[in-house]
Image (cartoon, rainbow, N blue to C red; front, top):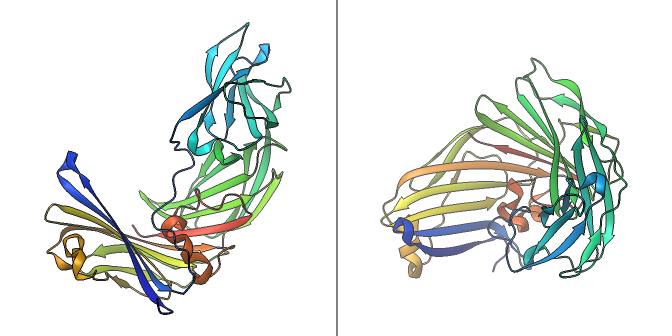
Length: 352
């Protein structure tokens, strides 16, 4: 492949329930030799597949109703007192190769308590005794500065248990007239978990306009977050046609990549075409015709209708340019699912 070439991945499958063929296409522009490319989006961290194995957790008498969170989700209760047994179900897609970590949450008497138990050994059909070291949940301060004007703000805090995110708090506040600051107190388990993910969403009316994520691979007592960093253009509406997608944008920024989604129908086919490209200022992106052998699955070779589209600009502090970002492909449009094991900030702007 020549330096700067284009790669298109086609995945086609039959959907007999809806009497149609589904074509999933991903195009990467400006590819360089040696690239390892990821087409499609990653499996959600809360979706588990494969064969299962289980362990039995023996709960403390005063915490028999607590819920355990671990790499494969949460526990299910087998029995209450005096036994206090719960099942941990491990799917093949998230079974640990060695020790795993557990966070227990207990609600009662108007408060939430937590217990952190790292380094539990995974044993199929084995048993684990849960420590009775519950302590009250703490709060950390998220200091947000340079909040964009006239946006509805939602802030969500998640604690990572190995690779599984547990949402522990969420706050919203009204639009501001001018860029301003806001201190938000959020629940967290001090010195527990494998990381803290602070997730901020901005919207106007029913439209989501920006998503920002701050990942801390620790359990901080405070987070200072300047929302003016990683600036991106402001995106308006997008519109699809038979040949591609157009949109309008204002302002400037320093995006890592642009991701364009085109959806259309032709004959008995529905096509979802995702384009990953450099984020130079533009207002359109064109579909790329496929080789003649793939004409049956090529929207550009057939009369198309029922168009839809979305455009994202993404900026990641740990993938600051197209060279470092585009191998991840369209996965970066959801910063709450990727790269949660390394400290970074991310900003995603989306059309409406």
